[in-house]
Length: 616
Image (cartoon, rainbow, N blue to C red; front, side, top):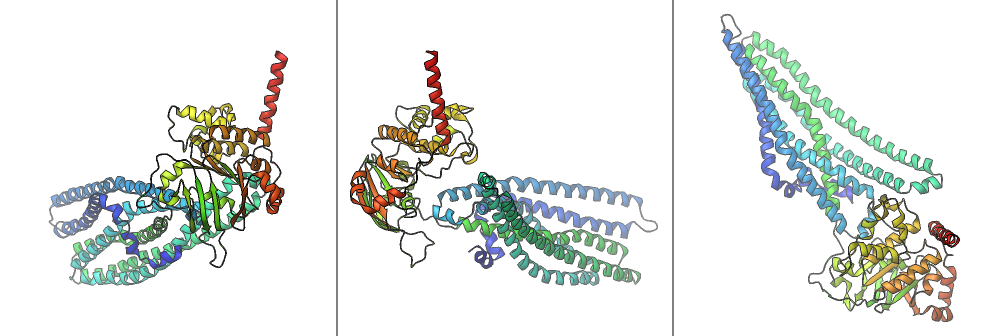
């Protein structure tokens, strides 16, 4: 998809997409362009002073005062050129960075709005490189590349016109060198654009590899696979190096052409100019002014290579940026949303079908007609063999995905008739694979907490931690204000799960969806958590994926998911007595895992109790 888009878009169509962002700062950019152009025009005016000086003063009997006047004029022009260069920077730097910040914020906002299905397809490194490197490319091009590309073109054009006015013969020689440059420039634009796109995509893949290695560093170390990871990374880095070298060689060849041909033209022009001067067809002043003008024009000509490369890199960055911005959000709000002041929590699945977007058409739906009704305040355990779609079913409730058939209703209202924001205030989720943020425990727990009448945020926090049996948070170095590191990796698996569960509890939802969030806890801790959940969230409807018998036994009812459908619903005892497949699933559930941190906490508590008894 990316390569197709890049190949179909032209340079001007890609740049045109920036116009809405540039419109507010166009006056400043125009002033920057005028300042840069004025600096170039002043630079072109200096050789004309030389021409007048040489023709009028540098001969026997010429006035010495003319030399001083010319020197003062050149000094003033030099100061003007420097002033215009400073003004160009002042006019464009702040507006360009403002546009970059706005586009980066819009990009992040769009990423937040896009569905989980989109993020399933994209590597985090690719998104990171688009949010950072590509927007940085675009800002530098807006502030410098675009303006200097226009100024360079105008400077060369005006310079060539002045050179023709001084000597059409020498002007033709210089112009003859420009034809091969133009032809080669078109070829360079095509090849460099392709390799630039390849380079930026490879850089995104490399960023993804770094991020995955950092997040999985414990696994790599534990299994002794650091060398293999390093070899794979080195291979990717070598591919990027090869692409960058190809890029550099392409630019070097183009720079060689745009530098060498004008220099050859100037060398040839020098011979022809001297012959014209000796024959009286060209004044010495005009000859000196011609080559001084050529020297001024040579700088912009040599800069055309890097500027063209910057422009092509910016085009690639724009294309990559809009590949994400053009992605459609499939989880949208209805035109006329329904609002409920009070939610009871009746959750009903009606003939629910679901298949992932990339599933082959011939394949059966993962969920193939699910019918299930949860009563308000009920705790329902969902069981089934591994891979039967339990976690997928749970993710449909907060609309992380949308059903592809049938409907899910909350108090009789289709979930798609709520705004996404309102629905997710009624539904809270805790996943088995917990995700915590590099903030304090307090900020992680209160992330989705709503306002609770009569309770302060600290009281909400304390209650959520107490229900989730996460009191260990108070014993951390800075208590609940302790920074827990990226993804909470400074905590154990059980501790992370309890913090994530506390976060869901603090939201005080009408519906609580738990994807086996207690899998890392020992049975005793799980029993305490379940008991507190029942008392504090007695009016909350809870749907929980269960992977062990102790969790199943604590539910009011159990639903059995088999072949994409709910094949049985009843109490644990009823299903155990009357359903063969349920007994098979229950027998296959994993043994109770142990959380070493929890066991250690329990042992320390027992030691404290023993110590108190001894002191007593």
